[in-house]
Length: 309
Length: 309
Image 1: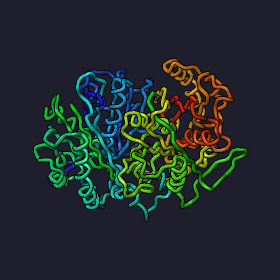
Image 2 (image 1 turned 180 degrees about the vertical axis):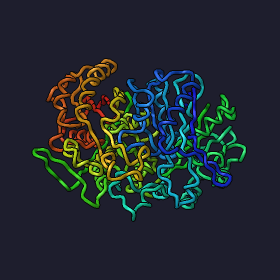
Image 3 (image 1 turned 30 degrees about the horizontal axis):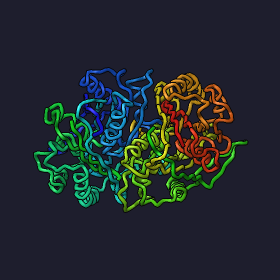
Image 4 (image 1 turned 180 degrees about the horizontal axis):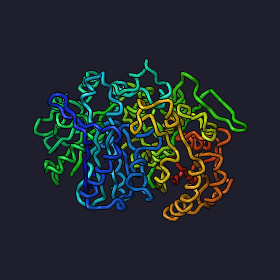
């Protein structure tokens, strides 16, 4: 077990609440940025952990989308909460599962004794690139930030198992083609406008996930030497309403996983930690529980991480 | 020592060579993308290592700038070289020093036995955002890719010491303000055009670096228990011609560090690995050497990594 302890977490959502039928979503208001709600999430996490920013010795942005093309997201977060300090800031990105990858990497650093307290910040500005003409994605996503403090520990808690796979035949099923290195801002015009919006081919993602995930999860359980019965709670990426379709196919019963899609939508990289943090604060997950974080991400990537909380 | 072995490396530059006085730079031609030269760099690295892509069990994009806002860079590289395979793909980003951070993290994964062969790809499309009105940066950067294969090993080679610091008072001294989450493509207009270009405040970066680096490097050497005499070769980030000013201030003599700024310019995240790979192939660095990778990055971040090659 790579030892790491969740010592605190905090969430933040924008004030602007919108609904599509029975679905609730949160979007940043004009003039507000993700960094404004990141401040709040981090403040909540530090308070929850009972520590100060000066106790943090590494900041990881476990974020899917860039706030700026340069510098990295973690440096911009650093500026908001740790200006004048010399805490290292780094991004770890596997799209929607970036928090899982960040936690996975953080555990090497706490376990080895390199760092005592690492701040992981996850969250994306979905609203910056949603296409009003693509109803399926326009009505799905929310802006949000979730922040976790993870720490070096002596107790029996940490990562029991983790694995990732990427199947790039799905690389263009969830993407924003324009705006960065491959198709610069300066090539934008009225004819290629759609290339600069978020584009999701939902049925293709679902089909590829349904094909790849069962085998991947089986392999993970075998390698970890556990069965689904040993898992107390599964926190899946809140990808879409299709969660209800995918989870049974993976042998995960309704009472075992958390589904907040109706209440919050898909919060991209914040989805897993936001749901995990709520579950911890609601005592749905308690000390000693074995928790599985599980998700698909643009790529198509999937991460599985089994944690002794 | 976290054991990791460099088993192969390869570089690639675009065909388009331009000169500014005695300075040579390389830029992608219209219609070509960074992925086209990434293919070549990776092919070279695999050949150098004497392995196939099927021997790789993790792909890390140690890249400063996004090719697309979604998915991550490593997934897009995966698509070019490993489509149909399930190799995990992840980005690690500390801007210009991303390769150093990627190598640092990779060493946890080879040392722990998680992966046998990791492919690290670094490189950026500087030319996508250079501002023709900002001579200092317009004439400095090159597009390039460097690829490394790093492997699990039993020999006495690996990371002796590594550290990072971020001083976010410099967060806006090297940046691209527009195009991503904080200022979307859709806000672009003729009046704020400059915000979508790369913007470097050279003298400010130099001043902050000169203030922070000497103390940081001293701390690193002390913590690592070595002196500059123990270091055979320093591979610094090829930030600018100011390398000649900064290196002596750090107590690094001219014969100890490699300066390729005149020949290649600043290749952003490719700068350190590109220079390291050339030094390995030119036998400037040989087995058993103690090598220091050292650089500043947008953030302002600095990384120091001491490697037994």
